[in-house]
Image 1 (cartoon, one colour):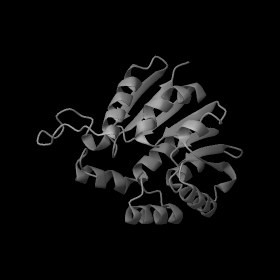
Image 2 (image 1 turned 180 degrees about the vertical axis):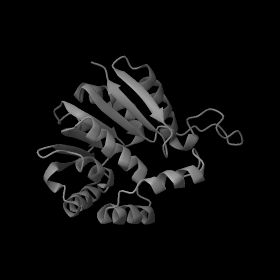
Image 3 (image 1 turned 90 degrees about the vertical axis):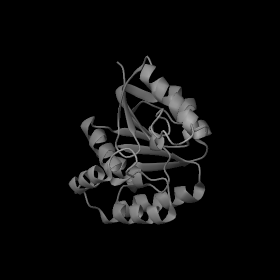
Image 4 (image 1 turned 90 degrees about the horizontal axis):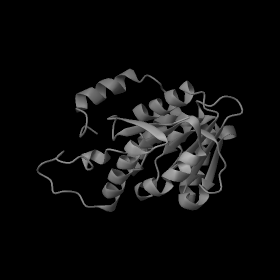
Length: 217
């Protein structure tokens, strides 16, 4: 990406990520060709490490796409663990199921098709980890439900919170102030995360920005 972190730094960090999986590599390469909204390998590795660190057994993902981030998450689950992942697009959901099978995690990955605002009301907590990477305009609207679904000490991980720097005042002094709906939604969401009484949050400038929130006991 190179907009938020110097390209040389990102290349160096990528070189340290030596996790190699042919299925993940193929999905990532095709995702670039098709301009799909996938996390990259560094964010995928972060998801895997965090899920492993808290010994997550139940994970909820919002925004399946074709299953790339879901594979990183599901592969961190222990035997008997479960990933529930929500996807609006039925064709992408079908492709994700195929990719989960190819990656050997189909037995622990459940794809739920439908609008996230409706489907999230049908899943039952508690979850150890929630990964929020769906429609940006829904980030705020889903937050209270997500917090309710998290166990105390559970993690909410949110992708794209820096939104190519658009949410940062003065980041690009030559560009007009952004006024699109997604940018406004993410900026408002970041403010809520920072002051939410039930969450402790920090944000790392990895790729497009990743917020890591812990639900307070």
